[in-house]
Length: 302
Image 1 (cartoon, rainbow, N blue to C red):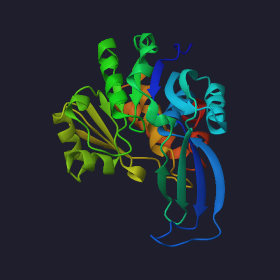
Image 2 (image 1 turned 90 degrees about the horizontal axis):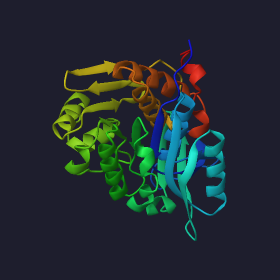
Image 3 (image 1 turned 135 degrees about the vertical axis):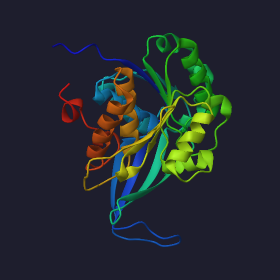
Image 4 (image 1 turned 90 degrees about the vertical axis):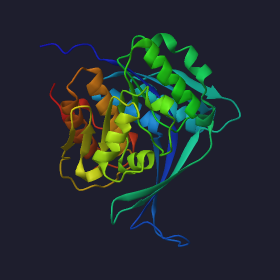
């Protein structure tokens, strides 16, 4: 049987170059650790999720901003190689492309990340105007919070106007206005982000509060423990495959990109979550963010 044509997904967000230092453990405040291994990877939550969705089988349009520098040029070429439409990846003269500094501690498989001010911060609602026709063709619109909140809110409004589900990954964590949450079809926070948004430490209670705030459904990622779906019916837990993590950077972005693709394909949300968990679990066994994203054939034969 022939596969249906790939669903169209629009990803609005950041592009960064990840400068990664791998250490035996994370340093304590004020401590200097010697002997780490340095690597450079392509990243940024928006670009990561775009690559994840493209490798999951979606046709992806990426909307973002970069500098006219080496980092930005390499990032654009990499997205193009993935088959991602980058006509709306704006070039900003005299502004640096996004850079993230990442420390990896191998004893616990944890990371610390700091992101510099960059062209990502210049992405404006005006930049979405020329891409507006694409919104009407999309099956899902995806955004995060590494670009200005006003731009994310405008994207949500464009999605509502086009009748397209809006998926928001509220990261990095911050408080969000009710006007935005009421436009969200699927909210995908991790435990920390869900707690910050609601004041509730229990994921099921946090999810229930986010439903009350206006989200249609909430999928909370729980790291190695899997994910929880909270919707109008109930809260349900989904276990993640057991793996030995090597690098957790980009795992949440992998999950989000695959979840968005599943929703765009019309999968039941339960099956979309399970497939996204398989993809994210495989990604943490590999180094890097975009480089770790699995291909569709590695996750499913369909």
